[in-house]
Image (cartoon, rainbow, N blue to C red; front, side):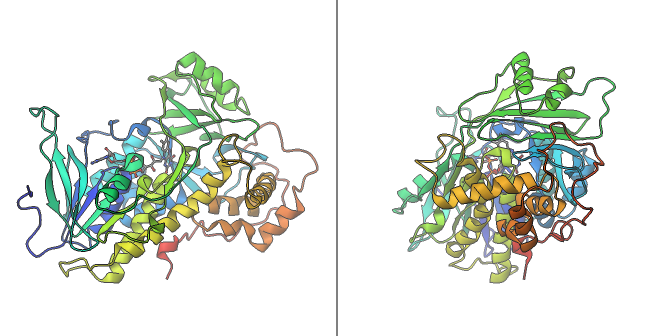
Amino acid sequence: MTDPGARPPGGSHAVVLGGSLAGLCAAAALAPHVDRVTLVERDRYPDEPRWRRGVPQARHTHNLLGAGQRSLELLLPGLLGDLRDLGMVEVRMPQDMLLLVAGGWVDRFDSRHTVLSGSRDLLDWAVRRRVRELPAVEFREETEAVGLVAGHGDSVRGVLLRDRDPSARTGWSEPYEREADLVVDATGRGSRAPAWLQSLGHQAPEETVVDAGCAYATCVFEPPPGHTADWKCVLLQSTPEEPRSGILNPIENDRWMVSVAGLGGERPPLDHAGFVDFAKRLRSTVLYDAIRDAKPLGEVYGSGRTENRRRHYERLTRWPDRFLVLGDAVGAFNPAYGQGISVAGMSALVLRRALERAGTRGTGRIPAGLTGPLRKGIARCVDAAWMLSGNADLAYPGAADGPLPLAARLGKRYTDRLLKVATTDRTVATALFDMTHLLAPPQVVLRPRVLASVLRGPRTATPASTSPPTAAPASASPPTAPSPGPAAGARLPEERP
Ligand SMILES: Cc1cc2nc3c(=O)[nH]c(=O)nc-3n(C[C@H](O)[C@H](O)[C@H](O)COP(=O)(O)OP(=O)(O)OC[C@H]3O[C@@H](n4cnc5c(N)ncnc54)[C@H](O)[C@@H]3O)c2cc1C
């Protein structure tokens, strides 16, 4: 059965599967370049910023890194202003943070980097609101994608969908075809694309998995009455020796969203007393001190899957034209690094750039041969994040199959030293943030000035301070200007000529 009236006559039509952030970004990238975009989402969206089943991770802290802010604003101009107006909090990193990395507490200074902090429900709602304003985009809620429709040769000519139907025995209608010139799968970690490819006679992609055994628990708090502090956010990172981390994020309506995590098999408790007690056993008690008298505003929620997992679609030699996969469906990361949304945004920009180059706007068609090469561009976005999360997590017991390869061991030794030097050296710290915000390639931490400082080692003979620094520390570094890294006039790789 084919869905009647599914395509504008003579116009180009793209279908995006999955309406969370990767799907919304893809729809925003496609909208100026095709006549119609259909965004297919299994859930019914809540009218307000509220949790929904299809994005279970929305109960946990979400930070929008530099690359995520930049790419979302490029895709949906005005969005960052919306987010601030809606109460999301801009946190200058590390000036407004108590930041404990493996090498110690990081001095607080203006690196020009910020993270945007708020509830994930609010972020999704605000992005959705902007995408709904795009005339080319049609939302199709309570509709599930169940397969691809093969076209001529090695290509896809549509997708198999079914609609929620409470009167049907399965709760769903019979599947029907929806034709499209391009199908984009953004259905997240649970994507069925490997099986769909196999059903069309293609191979499933190879997978790489690095699992540090990270288990999250999150609770929202009202700060204690009269609370004042010179920080907005607390971030206590784990180490393989002390595999527990914690983050306190400010979110809209003067609340804190607090997540704690155990790695290597330790699971934080899901009751309030146990949660607070777990916070006491982090690498510092500052987070515990902040929340012990704070009022919990809801339950403690645990998280599901957090392993780093990438599917190497770019390695497949045969690929069905007019089909693309992006977002968590291609690369999903340990959430402790906060990268997923940024990679989704960057991947959507790669798609937009390809459409611009192909000159599709106003032509009523999407040319053949676009998606095969695009897989590599999307894989490069995943690479940038994987270099951090996938590689760093290899150091946790059980994450790697067998002993660490030499390159990984050397990389870890350099990173360990870098994280010590970055606690007091602002140029090194800024380069570190350029990299972790995905605004510069990982090689930024090998630039001559950074390399020299790291090889020289920490400037102070004394070990890193055991108590967190205040906002205007007497820095052990000379008052160098922040590195001329890309933080201020940041340009993502996709924007560079
Ligand atoms: C605990 C946790 C914390 C995180 N914290 C951060 C953070 O701080 N910063 C950050 O950048 N990232 C973070 N992430 C990652 C981030 O949540 C994802 O990268 C982001 O949601 C983009 O994912 P996505 O859109 O590809 O997939 P998802 O968000 O998983 O969405 C998939 C969508 O597809 C829909 N869907 C699924 N199957 C079908 C189907 N067959 N048909 C139709 N619709 C379907 C679902 O309903 C859903 O809407 C975190 C992740 C976790 C688990």
